[in-house]
Structure formats: structure tokens, C-alpha cells
Length: 207
Image (cartoon, rainbow, N blue to C red; front, side, top):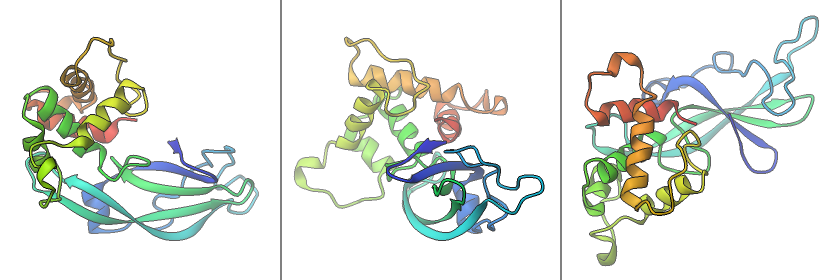
């Protein structure tokens, strides 16, 4: 759960992006059990429904849908709800959607792995993760998004479960630490898989 700007709050469902794209869940399927802002129950005993469906809203998500897949840009139909007691508007999103960012958590995790663990040049990382194929001449061999993600991790604003790195750490070292933390969040069944598989799965569950 993450709070957004103003009166809006984001809640993550247990449904992944690929499944959500194939079928938008019904209002009842992903209705929050309680309001993340005021803690009001959705269906209090002896009372009427307190968290009402509030329509759908389009949201972009960028990056591969699987570790070795091609990067894509998709539009998710996000379910919205309104809490009657406090007026909060709640957006319920699939696993891996990151508040305030267009790239999915899995894409960011994959980029950190390619940059920090596999030591690929930023231009190669961009080719693997970004769906944008046309970039300016100055950006052809680089990708500023990765550096922004690394700065956000340094400041504790992205993947809060990653330990803060010493100031002496390079950007690659910060990315490597983050990637290995995400890999540790993957389900035990993936323990024998390559690091990109584990990071991809772990990033979807990270907060």
C-alpha cells in the first residue's frame, strides 16, 4: 500500500500485470477489505457497503512482461474505489505497478540487474528494458532513467526494503545491492533460477 498525492491511495492486488491485461478483475474481486487511509471496513457487520466502486482509469506500464520478453508499453484498466467515511479515492493496481513511475517494478529490477550485476552498458540496458526504440543521438549509448532509479534507491524513495548504501558506493554497486535484495524476495520455488528470473519475480512483490 502506498499513498499518492492529495486524496488518492494506491493498493496492490495479488494479480500480476499479465493476468490483469488478459481480464480486468470485477469490482468485487479486488475491492479492498478496508480503507488504507482511515481503516474503515469495506463490509462492516450490520452496516452497508462502505467502499464503493468508482469506475476505471487508464494507466500506462512499461517494460517486459517476462524476464526474456521484449519491452512493451501497455495500458492497464485500473479499478478505483471511494471510501464513504473519509472520501479517499483508492486505486487498486496489479502487482509490480509503482506509484508515480511509468516503468513497472519488474522492469526497474531487470534494469538494475543488467546494469549492476551483469555490468552491461546503459545503452544495452535501455534496449532490453525500454519499449522506446527511437531516442536522440546523445541518449543512444546511455539511459538516464537508470541513474534516476539509483538516486531514488540511495534516498530510500524506491524499493524501501533495500539497505541504504555507503556514500562511497558507485551507481553500479547500488544497483547490484538492490538487485540482490529483490532476488531474495522471489518465491522459494525459483531458488535455482538465474538471477534475472529471481529479480523479476521479487520486484513484483517489493514495496
